[in-house]
Length: 121
Image 1 (tube, rainbow, N blue to C red):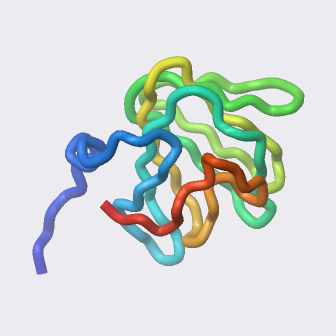
Image 2: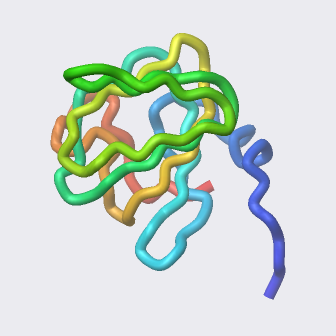
């Protein structure tokens, strides 16, 4: 067995598309996904699970119907299950999502930004 750390910068260098989560590891039934985000995403929710956003580099905002939260490098926020939200970033932002296997990035709101699920890098 090889004991190698997962290097976020190295993994992030392997793709350029925005809003397309890439799995880098699993723990129990949860996946750790790296994502590059820029511009507006879609309004959506996840009825079955909370969703955590961890900012690795850059800045982003998560809008809610009644407010918003701004996140910078080294900060995180947990969106409770069932809460409608819309992430966006003016400039490219690198984040990690932690969520159960099988979670679709747009929830039930399928759009052109719905990404293929379970893509590993």
